[in-house]
Image (cartoon, rainbow, N blue to C red; front, side):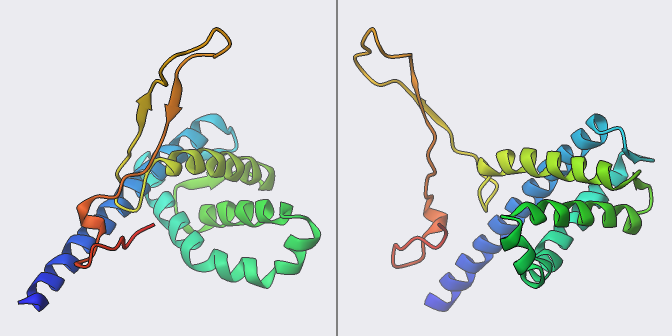
Length: 173
């Protein structure tokens, strides 16, 4: 009986992770669309190409980026992390060579596009968890003094029952 419950739990976790992946992919696609609109050297033939480029960029970042960052670790240390921006720009430029219909004019456009993409997607992904859920709570502290500047915004994560295993321990951070 516990085997069936465990498989059901695994299935729920897999569905939750897939939903989170799809939501992050969609948000990164929207961010990439914004980059195409803002940076003049980044262009697409069709808007559907942006989704494919976001997917390929995600695979590059998931599989190739850790290896490249490890192999270039001395350059990262010497440049105090600036070389990471160069690696991101190189991946952004490489995507234009892999995905047909996605064009990056030159390396400076790739650098600006990768920088803008990184900043916006970082901010957006702060609010999207592994399961793709967004939890934001606004609250006021009681008894404002004249010196206070107004309401306090409290943003916190929440652990749902799906995030716990059968022993009640949290599986996801």
